Length: 277
Image (cartoon, rainbow, N blue to C red; front, side, top):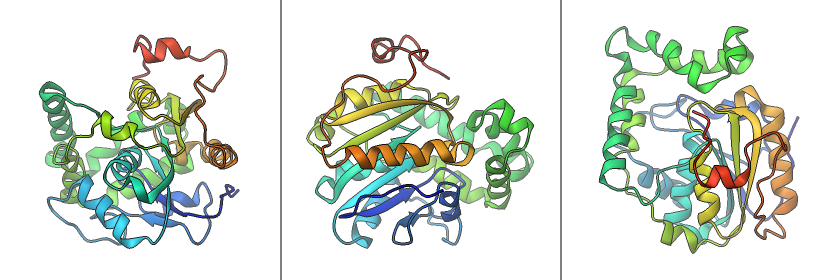
């Protein structure tokens, strides 16, 4: 299973917290794709105090020419940050089950920091051994956790192998990052596909719906996937990449939400009345 890709730009793939470059093996990617690893993850050494802006500056400096960025979970927030700080380098973007706060006021930023600190501090009592039980039920469906699906096993193994300080770093990188501006993001006219999951208990749908309102040339798909879509539902992610690639040459806005008629209507998503949490 390998997703189809459109030539003319370098695919840059940004995964989730605790994942390394191999997380994209579940989906299938071409050899020339750049797989980003976070500091302290996979083969990368820790960089205490890093933030999202520093990471996207590194990506932009390390890749020649235009970029097709695909981010899952935290990787979607990194992709949005790349768009804001280096819009001329991004040809297209796919944001899957993740969105950063945009136009965040002081109350939102305070809540964001409190949530990050609570997650960052999980290893204080029992080390990284206590983390999988705390986060896997938010990242995957109950069935996947109960049956110990391959993506769940992968996530558990990476969590247990991760240094507790690297876990702290990546959670605190969010609050340490500059805020994102809807005015700046509206100036990006490249094609943006947003993919939300009806089984995403960590992110929900509201943030992605808001990004759909912001980006002028976006399309919003809703699929029955969890937060770690590329691990639990790689076939759905691969198909979504194929659809994004087919739409990319035209790249004009698709206003209506794309998905099953049984899923939440677009007007309810945009008004924030139904959000999966």
